[in-house]
Length: 229
Image (cartoon, rainbow, N blue to C red):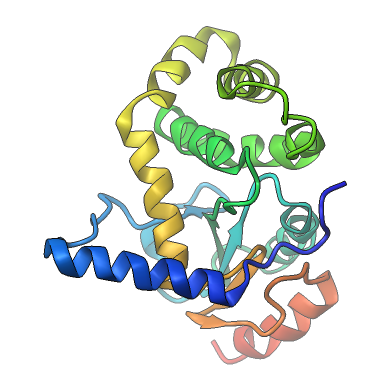
């Protein structure tokens, strides 16, 4: 059974960040800057308006994290309550290192985004719906190739259609999808994300991060902000 909490120990995150900083310092290298701002704006709107007049909610999710799964429906409901012009929701992918299928899941979503941006959230919701099949124990005896194939056939194909699977597989194996997934993880680390779900509202981290927030909590958090717009 998978653990119900998915917070990376702070000491482990600090150690990773210190090690990464040491490597960068020795090599004198700039971390790669993505061609687009990380994250997927919910509702199919362009990214630019999300950073304008609306209250911006950023949620860091791991597609195979049960807490991320439980956190999405109340946030989705709150987004529908306010509408995208008042509250913009941006989901960032954050593959937790102790979920063996998390990186593959996030890479799948990045790949699908390149093919059809409107398929991102249907695929994320497919992962949430069927994530128990991709927990550590069910995939323990499977090869990486077998898990990748299962994701493509069982989760991706129903969203993008079997006719697009060849393009999906080519994109999944392309270095760009790998790089995009790595950048998503590094972006979360740079923001101080230590687990999923993790929330920011207008750039400020919420104290409720690490656990699903219910609908009423979202309303009580966002109402005062929306009311001042």
